[in-house]
Length: 313
Image 1 (tube, helix red, strand yellow):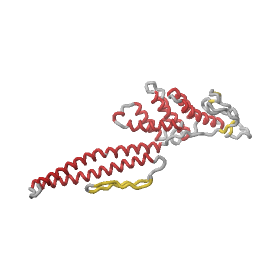
Image 2 (tube, rainbow, N blue to C red; image 1 turned 90 degrees about the vertical axis):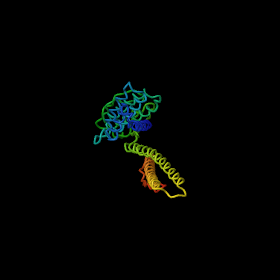
Image 3 (cartoon, rainbow, N blue to C red; image 1 turned 45 degrees about the horizontal axis):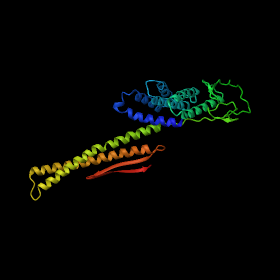
């Protein structure tokens, strides 16, 4: 499940970047992924799962897209169980685990590597077993050791004194494919997912890096114009060598000098801003676990320019 969460988050981020272009505005898959991403960012995990789960059953989509949507639905149901379906909603509702297991079972038919999905199903089964062992009602059938569904045992009014709540007997429900132990301690295993803050950081890094790189295109055009002006100045100096300049030649020389200084300043500003944005984007993408404190200051003069970058990475 951890691998599926990482893959679906990376694919969702890439799809969000692609959906921001005008050509992808009419793509229904891109629009759906955008809605799911917005719901996850607002911590409306139930809404995100309710959007992704029905779409994963659409026959007009490719199996890869359906598997992606199933992974997003399973991830959102897991987040809803851990943090609540929406802000200020109760957590640890076993109904979300049942829905997560159903989506994962449907995803088995959409992948060529069912072992990864089986591992995720085993973790969900362990969480459901822990909920049942604590005495709470589970709204779906539990999975036993041999893979069959069994009825939930009736809730005992007074638990036995010799059996602590965290220890289950030999009939406890465990993940499929594991040998039945004599005494098993069932612990919750939360599904590791990429946090909304980390997804926002990745989008911000890409959104800063790409404009920074694009600024080097107009900077190249300005530098080409500056080179043309410089060649014109040299040609004028060569033509007027050894004699006094006429009024027209003086005016042309002044005009070329102003254009030279203007293009130099424009190229320095464009280069400094582009480098600052590109470096900031790279820093955001390269530091996933802690926020970097970086200061970027552009500087420029006639004929030269640069960027001052300082901070911790």
